Length: 327
Image (tube, rainbow, N blue to C red; front, side, top):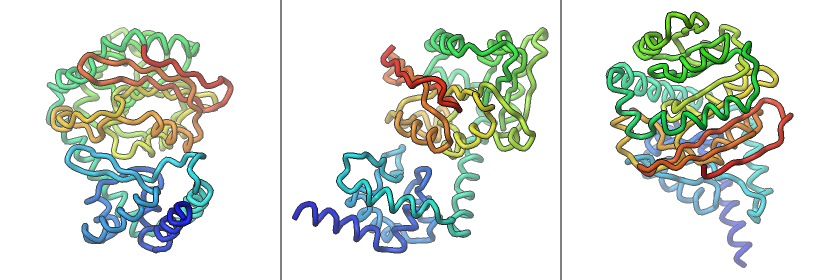
């Protein structure tokens, strides 16, 4: 009876058009309750009712991001007795084009998140480094990062791009290792600060104002793409992985350094963070959906309670997966 009751719960959850649209919207990323209300044009109390049914059926999961509750599709595991049913439902939805109104609503949410992040950097550029190092000081993971770079065995001629280089410390180090380096940032002020850090002798750095869509439009192809403490400022992490895959060469590498999931909400106001870190499986899932293979993972615990994860994703499956934890 327990199995039958649970199957009835899943069937009930999937038997409503609006709930299917909620699952459709959540196909690649998470949204807050109020964001979903706007995207779906539905009242909050009605939405909460449907989300409760979906959560009870094990189709969505939730997590707190500051004062908001964010929902996303559940991570499906083979041991789920209804794995096949849920997987088939998700696959069917994913083969269906999202309604124009929903796509427009999602784009609007992304635009507002992007504007929020950009305004923070424009207003706090001078003190951003000071604020950022309250969370994760670059010196605490610099040696590990450089060891990872050395382990990639990329030639000096490799074309490398850093997204959101901040004050430019890593950018300057990259310019000393590789002959072709690109700095990409949608904040003119932050890009200017990175430019000021680069030595007059380092003429191999190109500065581009814009986001990854701008780089794609310019036909840029990369051997190495780096996000150093940047992903938690990006409106849609899923889209960041999709864009990364488009920018990388056939054997290209995505190197991601960011915070593990945490609950220290003060970083939103202090550092302009949109996301309170990420679960490892979230990054793996987004990478897989973009056609990238998880190649290497390192996790560094910091004294202030944060944990930094250094993740390597590759566009080809030439290297076997490996995981180095708790360094």
